[in-house]
Image (tube, rainbow, N blue to C red; front, side, top):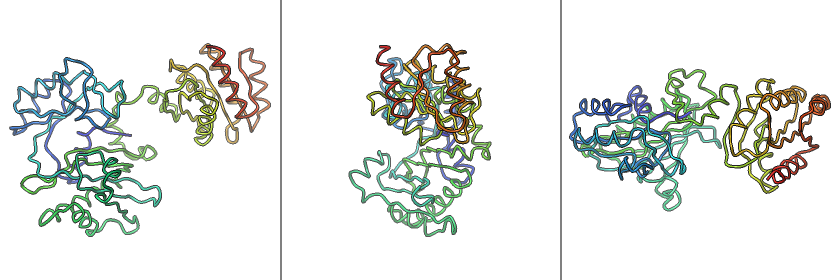
Length: 399
């Protein structure tokens, strides 16, 4: 789960991480009120969307002006003008795709006198199962590009969870970033507070780009990108309360209500599968037969008839879906339950696109019997290759 920058900065303040002062705004009037609460003389007006590259992004609408999603204002009147241009318009960045994201909230922040821009992030390293820090002197830039062009400018290290954070970790970061004097002590505290926040809030990713040194020698976290472990949200009620459903794909939101793992893709073949590994194999074999999967959808090992029906509805809500492949290996999941769900969904929704079902495992013969006696146009497949060939051939034949 992601949160907005202004929400991330609220967390910074709770953990004593130094950051700029600012206020969220949902209307132009709120933006003006926020600007008046800040000392100025410079204000930063930031679009709040779940995507990076906002500053270099462009709005689709001409009424939004030529500026990007982050703008520098030198008067309250300029804050008002920028807020009017940005709110309600569509921002396109390198991470949004051409469709962009509608800006529905802003963050009005006090301007900072920046001397240096640095980079700091923390993430869970799957190779070591530890929290790893990535730091670089090249802040304000695309870190992937830095890694490609000048990898020597990046320091990466892990913290042993058994011993936890020690001040020498912070000093290691400070020296890598070229900090001196009082800045070293600031960095030791900063990294310690970030590590504590990362662990206590069950984060998967924390990125500060840029982490700045101001002209008076202070460290400030000027940005905040945070991602949280979805499996731990049950114990992070305050984080769940920050969820912005408007920033998520409506189909993925609907899938989460039924505990379905769903990700929309760009293809034509809708997939309904149990198990993430089988889902990946199903998508691969569809590509092997010359077509593209329209989604990743894992119904899990305990799918009910209602859950399968909900999965069908989500798949069919995608207008690009030209055919559906159901691929179930019944172990914990009984094939007859899946078959009942498929038949009920096909009848309720009036499925008009080709539908191929491959069942294997517990109660497979009963499952095939239910589908065969349903009177519906359901193609049965014997194995995964047969299923992929049948669905791709049927979609091509349907035009």
